[in-house]
Image (cartoon, rainbow, N blue to C red; front, side, top):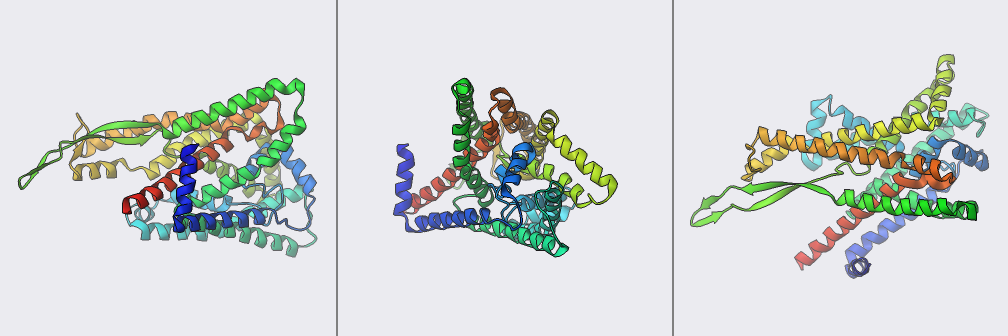
Length: 423
């Protein structure tokens, strides 16, 4: 706690850091204002009841920062942008040129890659907003007197999501936090008072044991998340000795740290975006008899807690491997180690080193994926045990809150360390 206040004091002393923090706070205020501006022509109470009855919409509402419950002009939140990033990263496996652009051309290549993702976000916004509005219309939540009204809302929602994407990038530019993750973080935090109010309303002496159990689980989850986020597998490294002139270099023993949870919260965010896509697509085609029935079947499928939880777990586990595979390159790392004169004891430099690192990462991903998958479905387990309706905020929300907080503190520490070094 003392260390935390020391960091706050150091940030306030550095004028440029203080300015960047104030910019981020200002952008978050704008985000919360946007999240609370509703679209016209909807019964807010009915949409709240729908969210309470639909576990998938409830989960999605958490990630959008209550934009669905408020029927906000940014109804879809950052979902379309995240979906666009997933599609672009999947395409790197198919098109070598995209892979080169993302991994080998540095900042300019990534800037182009991100620009393609932004462009792809627009049609995805249009499709998802149309599908979601048609779904709400089928549920009797909203009514459109003409196609003009439907088109108006689609354009407004699309502009809202694009605006949030822009806000996220502005936050990232301050180099103190990842903008997209931070907006999701702030949306979950904004639900805090609502959850606290629900806890007070549902409290009774008969449920005291459930409340105590929920609090203990929350502390255990936080402790486990912090432990996993900080845990790493250390691969020993030695540096070959080199003689330059009259001086001897190298011969140093160190280690290569590999995080247990390299993917962070990205697999969970990806899994939710993927779960949204088929339901949205089927709503677009719901006017056709076969697809209309299929859309109803998918909706009923999502209401089955056991099946939905199992699918959610599998997606999170799979995306843990996928995201690590596209962001972590053992061959490139092995080549860099070889160029710097470093080697793993007992392992030949080059191809064997890459294979060894890949094997270690795959083993780590097994544990990391199981952990993330368990955290993702934990809310449903806890809610089933405690019978508390607000217990669904559990693991996933806490994982995002803790992970984003840790990453933000790391970036702030890096900025403060840089200033101490330069001074």
